[in-house]
Image 1: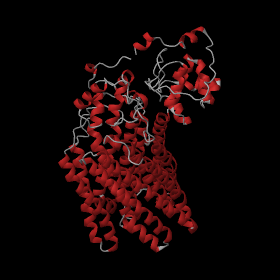
Image 2 (image 1 turned 120 degrees about the horizontal axis):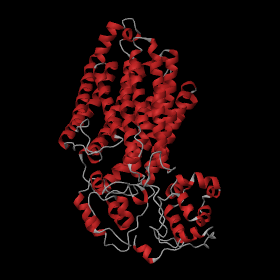
Image 3 (image 1 turned 180 degrees about the vertical axis):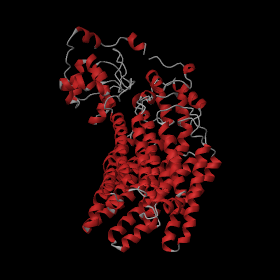
Image 4 (image 1 turned 120 degrees about the vertical axis):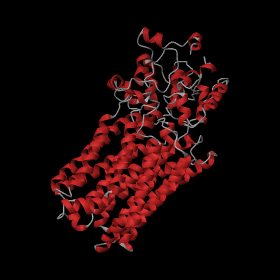
Length: 636
């Protein structure tokens, strides 16, 4: 086998090319965090990008790779069950947001628009929808991303993967039960116990998640760096909000009448601040500080500045939550504590964004950068609107909507809701969309530059968010603005659905996304081993006698001519194995054994008699199926 010459290893070397010619290099890349990323041939990225993204000095990486070239025999990558653990969390998060989350929210918004009143949607229905968004949409994506990325950033394996998988079951089960049964429990107390049990399951899932990440970090022996501190703070807030949310749900379900009104007025806004600013915003800031430089190439943030900013952000979250509570329980004068905390939060966030030069020239052009940039613009809009809230309440409303309900009540629910929507959909959701669209292709071995630019979901999300924020504020001045706000939810859900289909196709290997010239459909060269990125249809076109092997291994739909001709070309061997839960390494060994080829994995020794081999139907196929000569293999 021909291997890569040491002098040809440089920053521009593509990982898939290296792993095809020199599979023994996989061990070095796995040690620095590759571990299952991109499938058998790794992600479509250069060694220079890999070194920066995984925080490895490039000279050290190149030196280790050159040493590995002398290894004989080639090192075999050992697959772990958590190599693609993110996938189940991302798929579940998408399912939640398109049902109990954004779609349910869009339905509630249509009810509000139809009735011309924000009271048209019940408290527990709104809270159940919000719960699905925070725990299901944000929580599941955060957990999946952290389980996948954190061990690789720390150059280690995920600690206690069995517990990590258990946290998925607990979290998803809790989300479904809580979101479905909380509205029912409001009218039938027999369901309250089930809601409380769901909340306990979610708290347990979060505690396991935090414990696994702490164990992973301690196992890695890597230093605790400044962006880790942001993630650690966010994990703390994640656990705190989980406990607080479960207690709050139980309290509101047991309370009635005036007691429930007091509970909501006192505790709901502080809880949302903890969830949005404490958990979600700090987590996104931590991930951004890690990714903006290492992935997008922006200037690396100053560790000193970031470590000064973090306590200010945490104190601001505590101050705004405590200020709101004390305003209700002690004195309205504590509004100063809330307002001062908001100013500190906004000023610190602006400082970090400006420092990272996020809106400057992008060193690395990427289709997902527009989501990240506009997301941060929405964060600044949300924080700016919060600072302007007193001027709106006692200025604009007093001048132009004197007789309106918001002016008479002394508080605008519409304006406050617009602030929340700007940060939850404009910032948080758009960051999830952008980051997921960046990492999922990489984890599946696709070149992001060849994928669709996702302009349609980008436009729909931002148009919907703009109409919602502007339309909701306008309802304080005219009831005719309700339909404008109402239609916004449909636009946002449509954008999320388009993005979701794109990502699900990649994660499940259901053919190439439209527009991908694909490196996942690697040309099959007769005499060379089959690999997981080869198309099933291409394999059967060249080696029709392998159909028996496919069918006997469980791929029974391939016995149908229509499936083979129309669908088999759109899925890789790895993708088909994932769908049917077949071990791809073992199956490739069987295929290559039928062809008398060594493959990229060790041949599988079969204890059972070999399946019947169907002879090629023509001399052309027989020639293609002929065993490779020594000369053929030497050119590999």
